[in-house]
Length: 331
Image (tube, rainbow, N blue to C red; front, side):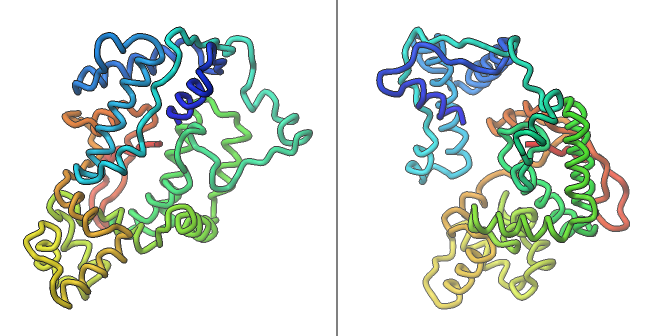
């Protein structure tokens, strides 16, 4: 999203002014957060390039490159480069905020929006928090799958728990009551419909099947395969005896040279939706678990720690287990 600002601001020689609906306080908070993050991890641009919007974009570009290098690994420079942020904007570019001059809360114009203009909130894209949240319904789907496949709950229970969490965020952000009610009605008692809708969306937008989403919520390959045997026993029992071979493929000690290793590799790629090289990156990465007391030692941890849309919920991690606190994020 930020790159769109850079592209627009630098188009055809650059613009002098950007009109924004963000308040000056919001702009300042975002600028300070990016600057502090860049400083903490040594990602600041050269001193003579830190001023103004150009400096902000340069800092954010450095953060973006480090973030995606962490995700994709050192052997995927082309993929990381795809996430570069344009910094070629005019030095004197300024922002003009219309925040104080406009009343754009949807609740204040509900009849105009829904009756006169016929506006409808999309089933899939309708956001629990803010419009820049990637896909809230898919996040709810993943949470429900996690509860179903890892915590011994039903899909409906997991979905209802996430919706309850999301509605609490909506209240905190002062969403109009009409929107909160729409959200409640959209999910209440409709878990089968939402499940089918989100499976279809995941397949269309990302090429993922539900089986691959289930693998995602198990996180079986990360941190040297900490959850590998648990995942295989629960979801792919016929592969459980191949766990040592799988670990060898992931750590690179076993080449994909014979028929069996090729078949297992193809199966892993089918189950995860990732290539073997991508699975190897996961195998060597740490398992970032949402923590009530995050250490913030890595860039991605610091980014997640700064997410304002999170809340502690209480749930069971097994059917007969104790109720434990868990941190959920709204992004």
